[in-house]
Length: 267
Figure 1: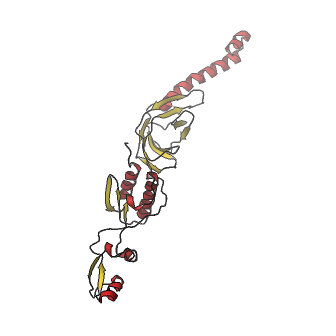
Figure 2 (figure 1 turned 30 degrees about the vertical axis):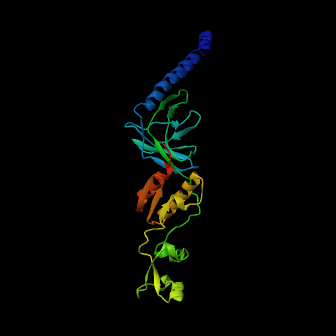
């Protein structure tokens, strides 16, 4: 266009050429200013289950006006737009392809802007400590309950006398505990004594699951942890290398799921 303007000595073409050149150089400056002063950090650690999209929680902060046309992603080809909803800071969750159970740290983050006209791209690679915990996928599995409590008396009665202590009948003992076979054989009224048994079926133990595969067992344990937590039941977790006493609540649930996610892993 400049050569054309020189050749034809056209003021209109000169004007248009210089106008486009000014826009080009202004775009460079505005694109740079759009990222100037932007702070990127990781917020709380994210979590998900194996097979689900991996959420990394990020915080974008800028003291001056919010940036425009901001895109972030793990790769250049897979970018997500960040739209600031309030002045100063913005929480953003970066969803990446699912991974196996364990602890992951976002390897690097591509940050780019094409503001204002899309002619210029300002970009950079960032290394931040955005962490993610991937829990085992919760899958229902058969569980062998090897003991009993007061709510599992019927189950305990099927196990044989070797699992219980025997004591003489007292008027306060329920009739369901009476050993009628002993009464018929020896004319002796005795009952099973449950108070000495310390086993609680709410304990989630590694050996109580029939699955032979490690990942399957972890999935079954994860399912029961989520189920008991949803019902606000008291339960404990006992797996090789980790013993978590019975408790309830969100913190206890997260502690158990963390133990399952990092089971037998170096990280």
